[in-house]
Amino acid sequence: MATTATPRVSTTHPANSADRAASATWPLYAVVFSSACIVIGLIWDISWHSTIGRDTFWTLPHLLEQLGAIVAGLSCGWLVLSTTFGGRGGKGGSSGNVLGAGDLEAQRAASVRFWGFLGPLGAWVTIWGTILMITSAPFDNWWHNAYGLDVKIVSPPHMVLGLGMLGIQVGALLLAVALQNRTTDQTAMKRLGWVYALAGGIIVAMVATIITEYSSRGNDMHNALFYQVAGGALPIFLVAFARSGRLRFPATTAATLYMALLLGMLWILPLFPAQPLLAPIYNPLSHMVPPQFPLLLVIPAFAIDLLLQRAGRRHDWIMAVVLGLSFVGLLLAVQWFLGEFLVSPASLNAVFGAERWPYFVRPGAWQHEFWGVPEDATGRLDVAALGRGIGIAALIAMASARIGLWFGNGMSRVMR
Image (cartoon, rainbow, N blue to C red; front, side, top):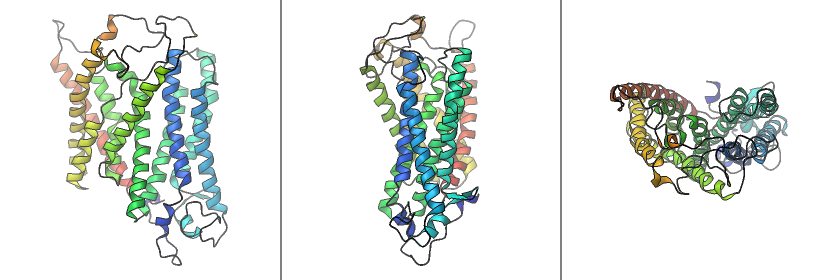
């Protein structure tokens, strides 16, 4: 792939200009910060819809999301323009050498050309993500005016918005991993490894938020569909981080950061008073509805890290089978029992956020039951049907893990 070629380093600066590149990476930090703002805004926006309703486009969550997109796009746009039009022969300082790469020649050699402009691959992906996010705003507003106020995550304008968000997240990953791969300084490599893991945790948070419709507050966790969706969506990223990250446990670190972000939103949002503004109101509320308790991804992520450390870079097809089985098996083991806890009275507290349902949900006994559980003729759990569903989930996870290995292999070679 074109982005994996090793960039030329100017012979006039043999002191490894890529190491100095890691010392002045404010565009990377700006994009990672924007990514965090976007995901926080997404979770906050879902809470706003669930608590208040969609009263106007100009809500604080929407503004935070769009502000994150604008900051990311402008930072990467400045990076591209500075790399393309910066003064030639500059050696550090303010001569267009935004990443401190020793000289402008090396910086341009570590760039991708598009329409005559030069910039890192991650910058280009971020810019396209920004364009999609900004485009989705009027599309979403038109959609609501034409078809009414929806509370669904999955809708055409939301999918355009989601693709834009994903573009910015992947752009942050590419910016971090390119710098991480080019440096040989151990201190800089570790720092960039943490930045890469943080960007990974943010993207895991976004993907896990998108699939919450299939894991509703524990009620879906005895349903094979939840494991099929999770097995398809999450191993791609966790396996890729484990393969390309430079920390000792990169996938585990990303999963831990995801849990920290979700727990922060779970515990902070209910502190703010809010009331529904749209009828019908079946569930009167006085405070913001928090997100559901995060998935316990640290367990399968830790197994992914250990397995890949043990196997190295050999036998990727065999490893995909092992990783897929491990992910689904461990996720089933932890989420099955966590689901039982979350639908029980024991979880009715501020720590786990149970019983925090949206205003448009009519309360009932169904809130404390499992949904979509296969049953036999006697009304008991159909173990055979569930086993077939989990088997399908394992196959999906194997395919997802194989894509993750391919993605991780590519990320570990990205230099631009």
